[in-house]
Length: 119
Image 1 (cartoon, helix red, strand yellow):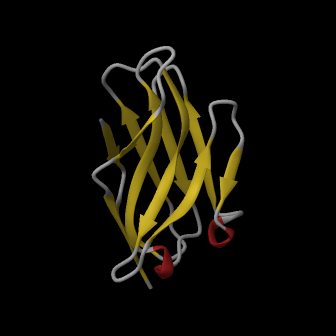
Image 2 (spheres, helix red, strand yellow):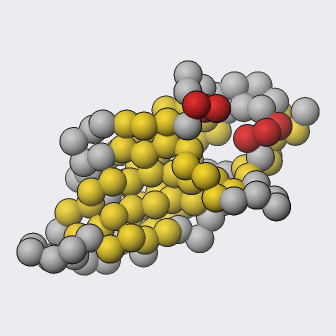
Image 3 (cartoon, one colour):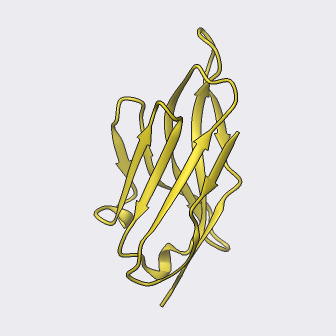
């Protein structure tokens, strides 16, 4: 299970920090990250990070958003700065979870948290 928190309403130029925690039986978490879906649009990648610390960002958020994770706590964060109205969307946490050794990872999604950036 993935649970997000930290969304809300913010003015353009402001900042928000999203958090996501994975729970249940966890042997290892491979990739964790964030996707977003604006009204009427498809779900798109925002940022992801591997267990080794590599990161990948959507071009639209590079230089403004920072993804980080705490492997000991099974958490991933998204620091969002210089927010723009076009960042308005539902943000979903994503994780590839290995429940036990010698098993394949399973993909999990959070329930989503709303981010609303006003102009």
